[in-house]
Length: 153
Image 1 (cartoon, helix red, strand yellow):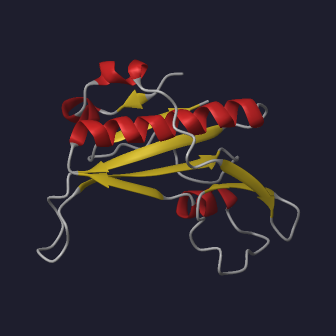
Image 2: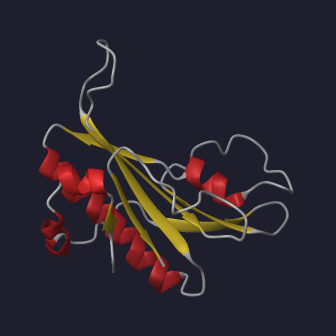
């Protein structure tokens, strides 16, 4: 299981901790069919499902938008461990339950410094995943300035 950190993440986090972190299965993945019989995947409270899905909907982008798990903590090490644990839980479930499908699991880190004065300035991770589909979704080779952690199969 190769979880990759971009250069910004390598500066923020100790990559050696990854092997010590156990999977966290608190956000199990489910699959559903849209009205056109296509399968899409979700976890937790899938965001944005209060609208209808069109026949030409890009399901990978739908998953990107809907599978947003937000975690925050003022302890960066604990936050990193929680994010990696959730990622490992998703990766294990995706490999076991959907072995013929290919996915991307993605986490972006926010140090909390860009928030306005009224907000809590907690550090956070936003975790997402989506199924790889030809011509759909985010290009996983995209470069990011903020710290990003990613896995794909």
